[in-house]
Length: 473
Image 1: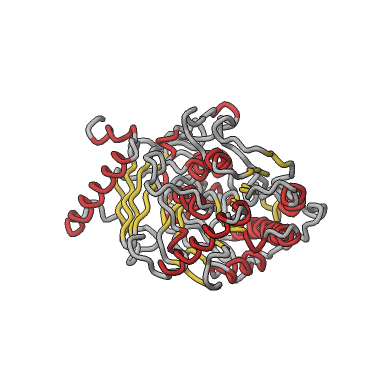
Image 2 (image 1 turned 60 degrees about the vertical axis):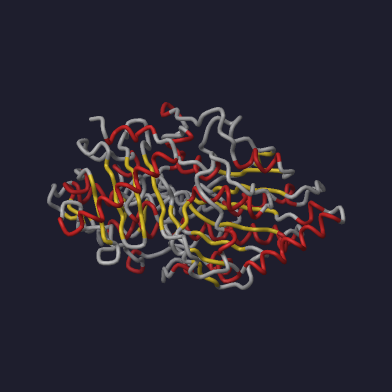
């Protein structure tokens, strides 16, 4: 592995020495979807049709243990673009409307770092962070974020530019974010997950699904209502896949494919209670597929535990712009150099930090997640768990909620979903659905204390303001 990296570096140095520095440096495309769990064919979902994403994985590497740090849109995107946990960059929740969260003015973002390193930068689709002076891109491309095929076509001029600098393209869909709607037999009214029924989107061949063919994850109830929602979610995921396919076509047509790193991921898990806004597996787990000219062979799987806070150093590494010593304002690390290893050493833990979603949703949580255990600290555990407005209105939730506090929503009762313990400790090997809380069991007291220490150290390292809550209140 080190021999291979050294060879790549020597080739790059030789090319730079010949005066063709722009050609030696990798272009980078970061493709981020909105509220998507690892629901693609390459991740083992048997019914969602995603041939283009599957092909990307076949030519590159699939990371099976990728996580967000906070399952909230603006907060997560600030982590993606800053390389900092959002408790440190101050994007505690949603940027838009009266929520009005924004990062500190002094945050140095990925596009700013890359521009300083000689890259041209562009974004298209969902943005959802602030201020724009911090998350500044040279070029803003137009496009309907619900139509990733159109978005890809609108990148053509940027990709075919005569500007010889390497480029960074930040490509963000609004799919499969839910938009409301009510159940009607097997389908939703148009726009439940951005789907437009018979009218569709220009250039998109809509793929529809029946509720009897979908796969229901364990944290959701297996009901006709839930299956109808999942069918609509799946349709939106297939629309994303067509955008991936068209974007690859544009990269090939512009002559950039052989020198481009493409990373496909999501801001957090699917928009259902138990997923989005939670730090349970349904909220934290995301897809992560990397296609790179530096990957030795395709169809690979890398079992490193990585998170979205690692993206900035990883992309800087791919771009040849990662400092030898990471600056203190980067909280992650590059996984670019371990992508050719199936089981790299030292990649066995991720951390998570959530505070808000909407302004009305204060519920800070901190997480240490290892291969075997997950510790969740519900800092405001005395409060009932708050709901995002779209999740509260979700027919799947409302149907179960109306049955009373003892009704089961997936593996939990309604009461246990809303009212949570101060600490939640799960043995994920024995209990992957996170049902049995071991925090009060004497047999796991040593594990609990060990993970608490790791949690405190994480907070100290990242200057978490909520560190004081261990001794206050």
